[in-house]
Image (cartoon, rainbow, N blue to C red; front, top):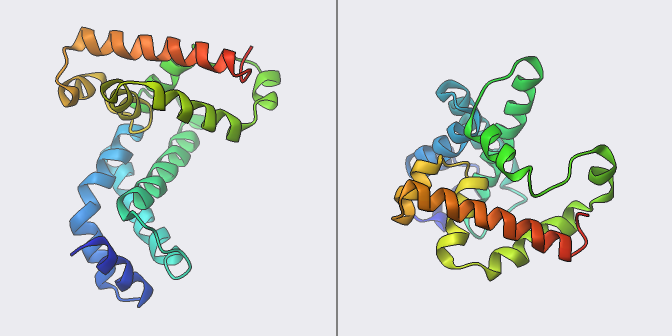
Length: 186
């Protein structure tokens, strides 16, 4: 079933929408959540929460791209669960590792975080990503949005592991320079 048909089922409040969503996007959503959480059971709970949130939001929302809409919901749910879980204990995941890698692009400290307008930051990052080659852009998004392990990013882009690490490192350095030029960070 195509996305328009699935959205129409949501709008009719037909439970078949949930089954169709699970069939078409279940593994995609599970992968996003698992990359962030590093735990399959928690990931499945986030996927189920995504179905519920989609069910509750669809009568008022009509997403143009269902996969992106659902991906955004599951990503937010997984990040919230990650934050909640890590208040209690530390545990490695691709989310934590990718945030650590990006930390060199942004200055630490409460003053900087308060001063940075998140919308401006997002627009500046988008502008920077548009300047990259398609390979660099896909690698960056796969690593820092979808939290893919570096090995998976390398395989998806047809690059070696060291090439991918180098590409991501250069991209992060370029992002830092871009954000400094834009005045987003000192």
